[in-house]
Length: 246
Length: 266
Ligand SMILES: Nc1ncnc2c1ncn2[C@@H]1O[C@H](COP(=O)(O)OP(=O)(O)OP(=O)(O)O)[C@@H](O)[C@H]1O
Ligand SMILES: [Mg+2]
Image (cartoon, rainbow over all chains, first blue to last red; front, top):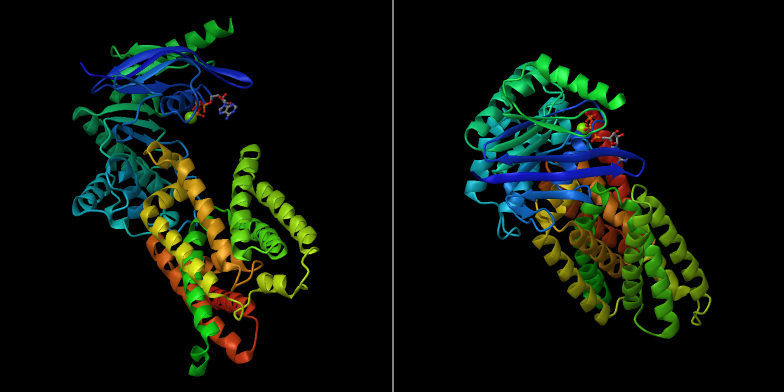
């Protein structure tokens, strides 16, 4: 099976605190990894290490069989950050402009204009997240949840093989949330490998095929989701925490 | 009124003003949206030191200004590393250095201060043929690079982290933008004056943001506003015998205020 992401013995500390300790796991094509952990457990830190937003100094991360230091196929990876919508709200950019910018990684001659098929892709991803009717609106004039959906569309437009989502549905209303989770599950069924953090543990357990559970001091336990119930996850989580504090 | 075009110096002034009104707003859009407006001022005050040096040692002042502007933007990048979240600090350090150097170097200008004055507030009579050609060549470089890099510039301006993840060479794009800024500042110092260049980069963009319904339209409107301010500013300054730089900038401010009032009514 195709190995998409391999994390080996990764540890990380910010200047004052150790956040991750010896995290290891492997994802294959079509896996859906749910990352569970309290605020400050290190979920975002791990995702940022995979994306080289933070420098990796202990351990090794491989993407599509290539060490991340040498990895250049940016278009294979999509990312929705936890703070995606923290841009300057007066920035004069439309939904279309924001989403299409991310086609950059796929365009061979970026200085040329967009093609007809680029616009088709735009319509398709906006349709997917239910934002097509807003395509010419200024992004700053949308609600928080609508902006979040635009950033999901932006991650999808480059047709990534691995999609990393750090609480992508913050501020999204219940109905849209259900729809977006369905869409993500469907993309996963079609073969997209997904990594997702989300504080809705039951839902994350439902959609994930693998789970990474962080206790508050970050040595993640990688579980194949062998039909864990929420209670069992909570038990593991509590147990680890208890163990750690002992 | 049309007789003004029969003077060679006016023709040169118009050509130079039109070129500047193309490049200043293009650069201005990125500078304003990246919240780096202070960099325009820092660069122009450093350019002034180079202009003064040029006048003292007898090289073309615009070339002297260009050299110092580039040094200025590179030092801003250098200081910005130390205060990454407070880029204004870097801008102020470089600006103070520029003003200090200008004050000292200008003490050595022998031919009186009138020459440097022309660069402070802009002057139309003084543009030489060489300077006009220099402006056209440098302006063309700025427009071409801006056009080729328009997607990268937008992406980096809107969301630098996402741009880098998509494979945009963000450091290269940022450095290029800074060098284009330096070029724009130094060529614009002749007509608009070093003290007012950053206004010509910022005010048209501010006006465009009042009406722009997308990034693309904001860029286009910025250029239209800058052209209108420059051309009408020059005509008014000729007819009323005013300084061109001041006229151009004040025309922009008045337009902005009108647009703001109009925007509030809607
Ligand atoms: N830039 C930073 N400098 C120092 N410490 C940091 C920094 N960013 C995060 N931390 C610390 O690292 C720990 C992990 O943070 P991280 O953002 O990875 O948590 P998280 O699991 O994503 O939490 P949340 O559920 O709130 O998103 C936290 O304790 C936080 O205080
Ligand atoms: Mg987080």
